[in-house]
Amino acid sequence: MAQRWSTRKKINSCTDLISVCEFFKSKDSNCHTLSLVTGSAGVIPVGYILNKTNYIDRVIFDAPFLDVYESLCDLSQLYTTSDWKEFGNPIESELYKNSILEICPYCNIENKKYPEMLFFISLNDQNVPYTQSLKYISKVNSFKSTANNIFVDIAENETHFGTTIRDRKMVNISKKTFLY
Image (tube, rainbow, N blue to C red; front, side):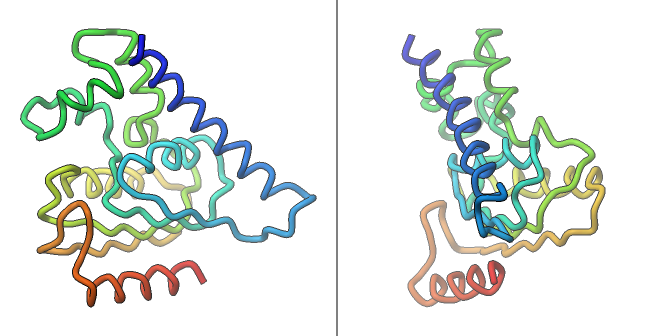
């Protein structure tokens, strides 16, 4: 029961984010450019909205969890079985498999306009393998119908949870520069 509620809540988070973006893009708002910054599993609703709408102009991904379905099916990954508590086990349940496929950013990429994107990934991230981001970028590039840029910052010695103080300052400067 907890898994079904949790998976439904994730879908609701995705549709709630669409409602927020609709407000900012409406005529009642002075928002001309809509940018989002997200990381880890927070990427799921952002990836959902990127696949379903064209509201977002720029997005920054930090250690993004983009291929939710593949990760939850890969028993060699560090957190697969513990993530089943949150998402459900797609290997044993068709219900969870379908729910996860519905919200998985990687599985729902299509031939449409995608925004400019900036990725911060690490070769040593044990929570989210860097290959997820590279797969996602490759698939978006193969389908995207516009020439928006995708930038990637690959760190060698970072973990999932961050950088050194000196490197963090450079990352913050990069993020601000990208957004403005």
